[in-house]
Image (tube, rainbow, N blue to C red; front, side, top):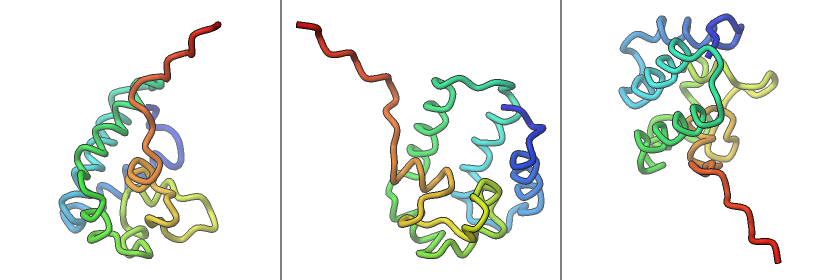
Length: 120
């Protein structure tokens, strides 16, 4: 992914500022995202699907994310993923899945394209 976008720059800045102050799960998820941002200039659909699958695997039980982020995204202001929140939305949550960790849990994408139905 390109590191020149404003949101991506904000993500990387937040990650650097967070240091070790965020819960380990959020730091681990952010490290996966950072690797993708730094390694891929133009990610393809397969790259995005692999990222989402890896984040889902790391999160495992959604209760882990609930326990860390709470119902009203208490950490969104300092979390690196908060950089991607749409304007006008101060936080993400399970009911307001606007950041990547919540999106991959609430709206999981298939890891393979659907097969085309047979023509009769």
